[in-house]
Length: 524
Image (tube, rainbow, N blue to C red):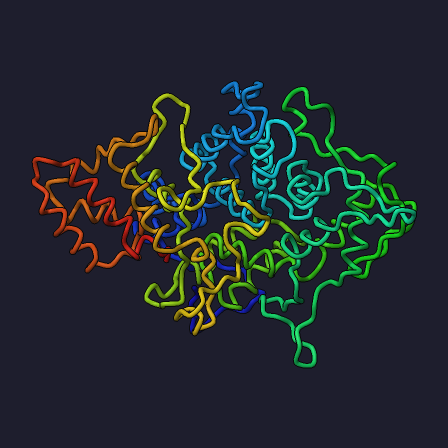
């Protein structure tokens, strides 16, 4: 939830890394919670040594690490056993593998954030080997996560898994004789969810008002016109092996509408080829002035804070519009602007409206990375964590709808947040049951790991005779400088009640109690 600084920079001003100063370990930990799937001791040391900007620039320069698709092939999962839907356990393995251990953490975290905007659920993939489809889609997001937005949108629009998710795989042109119209699902959602939203926005993300009323970004006629673009696209090649999931969908021009296509003030002339129609549609959508504030706000929400100030959104949108070299849609510049913004780096941590609820996937990955969880045999066995009674109430690539696990504008009803007009997206999947389920699930891993995923706790066991020092280390790794001394003292007192002859039990108790605290559950 966001703090508004007393002297916010102009919206067009890029954040100055030179004014941020050298971070403390606590500040470095909090930065890494925003930029990665969780701090590690080594990364905290590196950020303190190099500074925010240098560490981030080194990350942004890294090439993508091994793809999910290639790892699944390496593990031999392209067999008949995994051809149908419902046999997707290896998908969890590779996704958590990269969340926890990938060296290109910023790219991997941004790709995950994008997967909650451009949503594909594995159960919706109506092709053989859906786990490869979901894996390939996450790879596509990682490939473009720090690239150009227009290229990302074009790649997503030609992806088979998205074609399945939003039902335009095999979409046929209109037929006046039968009254058939093209499927409008993707045409609607590419505008509503992936680019411009429902209402016109000012550059700072606020709703544009004309004569005291908001202005809708598109009409049903726009949807109908754009739907014609997404006709004739289907699977590229036979389903004899998994490689068709890597290829963009193929166009059958016989099924593609050659009619004139009108949408968002643009006109694609009748007779235009399907490839050119899609290229033009993506260009028109990507050039819309809403894209910067609309996508920028959601990336801020996924990485930093649920309620960014208009000034913060404005600076990020300005980076989207122009990366400083005249290029529009440079996502690397957008990510840099988000993470180095003065509001992200120097917020008022005591402000009740700053920060975000840490979504369950990030709570778990934060523990795993902080304490060096690793796969003993390289299989990275992880279950589907969707169940809210005994697991996390969230599992990657398993959203049941294109609207993600939670909506970006979700407001918990009849709450103080609602009274203050603040959103809290992650609370849409948070209740008494899911809180208990998370704690029980985490307690199992903290206690004994799961199958081949194990954690040594060597450094923590060495501190176990000093409860205050132990809790200080755990708090630093999980919550950085946002952890209160009062809470740390209470946890240290509880840990000290465990006999020192049981050092591992002291470590487990310290981790579990810190991970259950509000200072961890709410990322500041």
